[in-house]
Image (cartoon, rainbow, N blue to C red):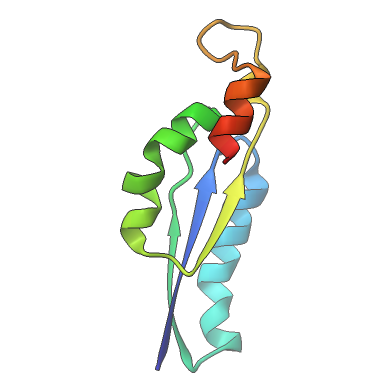
Length: 95
């Protein structure tokens, strides 16, 4: 049997990502019964790309995924010193 691991990762401010991962978890085995699905939602609340990059290994790569869905939001550009991330760091975090 084929084994496939999917991880949903990113910021949780959009319910769309959580709903999408939930639907995958509930319906993939129905549409593709010959595949063993392992689906993980490891979204982080109010995360910036800094936190997402920092936690990538412990939250995503630990599952050895075949597919990763990433949801990025606008927390990097919030007007608070704790969240404000400059363009250069933002680009570096994406890489």
